[in-house]
Image (cartoon, rainbow, N blue to C red; front, top):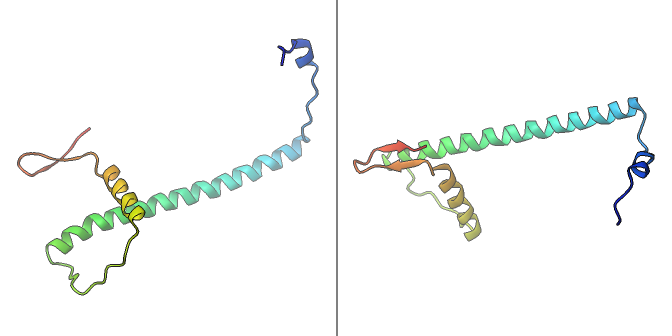
Length: 107
């Protein structure tokens, strides 16, 4: 398309709803956005709680505070395992074990 002339662009007519309808649209968008933001916040909180649970569960099992004998482990699809490994790698990427076996946080 050839370059449009500014007089042509300046004379274009745009249809838009009345101000009160624009306000209703804005309020609807804000309401739905708040619901979505709240759902995201809840999901992030639940993920953090699951990570804390996992972090605490591993030492409890290793030290024998939680008895896992007789627990049936369900089959897990390979793609789910890969997703779990990716999530674990992302969450633990900043943890480093030094030569003495101590954990240090890296920046």
